[in-house]
Length: 251
Image 1 (cartoon, one colour):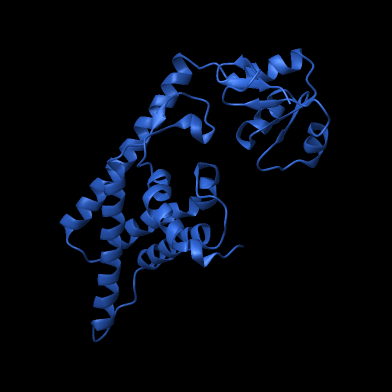
Image 2 (cartoon, rainbow, N blue to C red):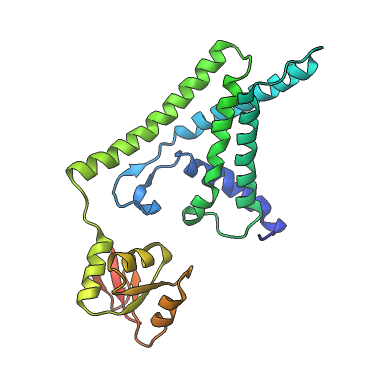
């Protein structure tokens, strides 16, 4: 845990303007940025207003149901699905608050997975709407929003599936690992997002330590030896491109 109240305003802005739209699929971005080996671009800008409408409508229906129940002379107990809806929404909101305000890690794509429970917010909102006595038209609109959101995700999944069935892309990390093994490079430095991939793909014949977020001390010890090169995703001085977009940089 890490609390930095002076950063909360900026982090809240980053959560609402960048993090959540990215998490919910409202930002067009290559799947390769998420570590998925493909050149498919996923995400659709129109998804963000659809999800916002879905969540807002569901929560309004939930609040209206609570107010109607409490205002009745002999209130009936809420439906189990209604209670479940609130539970899921609160779980998602707690995850967002914890990720955004109770830690000091950067809010970026590398830490996106730490807030996956935020997906429970729209799921809970749907449960709230469908378990409420809202007009059928409201439920139909929410149902259509769910269908649109699912269709956007299905389109991206189909794109990846088609590519792997008909034109599987070459894995540059595997090519880089093979080149490094053939050259007899025992250890190297690289960013976290590719370091352990190359180590795994080489079956640890080359041990690549993460230069930014280290996880394996053994790799780091080996990489501290004099003359250890760095593997980079951008061109470097006197470096060699050992695979498309992968460069071997001298120490």
